[in-house]
Image 1 (cartoon, helix red, strand yellow):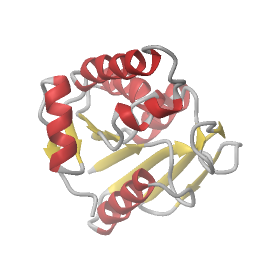
Image 2 (cartoon, rainbow, N blue to C red):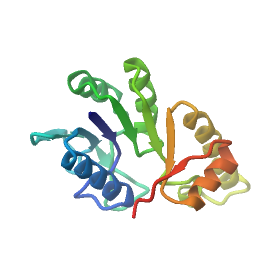
Image 3 (cartoon, rainbow, N blue to C red):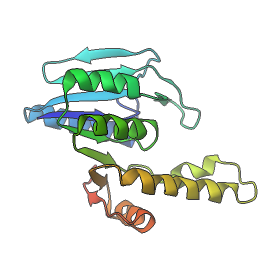
Image 4 (cartoon, rainbow, N blue to C red):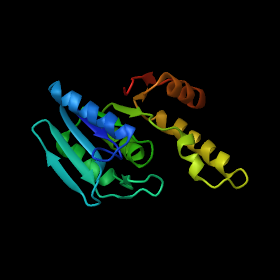
Length: 183
């Protein structure tokens, strides 16, 4: 099977999502699957690396002002389309709910392939970075949950790394993710 993983962070960057995606990619290649990983570049400029079973496509990236030592690719759709055209994934697994997830919705719909979204972060991971002016923080978090409801319905499957996260996602979106532990 040809599996594409799309994420913002990937080693050598350090994050739970990066480690999760690396473990999945290496585990699937060890089982004989061909894997494509599309992630923000840890260097800033785009580059790629290939082994017989794994292609790593690093997208042009910028420093993430919300997370020290992290980078992000602002809109990966064009490069994602190019990589999918060459790789022809049979399933796409996205581990980022912002830019990569939006691009993933479009690219997988165009290719008519199943898609999986893993919810590593919840809106309250981001909302503390919003100024606590009036109800701005609450309004921001509520809008992120509205976006999550909309986004989750566009993926074939939804996964959460714990029962607690799955239950919160279900409570807020009406969709119960399958729990697959990252540990």
